[in-house]
Image 1 (tube, rainbow, N blue to C red):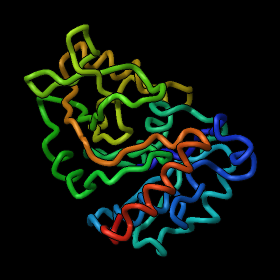
Image 2: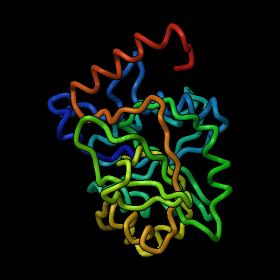
Image 3: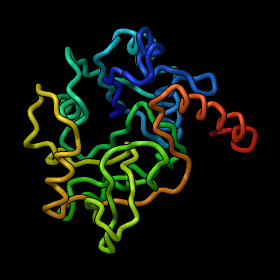
Image 4: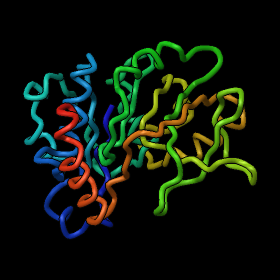
Length: 233
């Protein structure tokens, strides 16, 4: 699943007429980059939620054939935030573990890892989060990884990490989330972490939360600098 329902307030005025995941980096939409790299990783069944200007998302991406994937859409009349949006889409996602990617991040994380991570979810964990070093700009709640491989809220002596927006979940992770009410992921994370049910990994590669016009420009600069060395970047 790719999350694409946000309003993108900090990106205005660009997002007044364009959904944030359709903003372009290196000549392709942010979400199109995800689709291209998912297809290259062999992941071809994709669910996309949308709310703000959702008709433009569907018009631009269509059935996904241009990117080598098959897309089903989960429209939301009002944005349900991340956890609510995923719960709303569960009927499309099925009964097995699945991956979720934020539509407004820029990363070279290896998506071919996601099926194996999903298969490993079992009795020990209900979610696996990809965490990145804390960025030099405001992000969400600081998290940490324990020696046991479990994710937890950051404590005083921990190296602070940030949730990257890439994760795999078992559907039971959302068992208590209403499918028609807004809810962010953080309360779900904290509740599951308290039960020791959230695994994680640290990723030190390319990652950017494209949440401002300045960071959109930074992502475009990265493409210019790296694409000549890594054509699949």
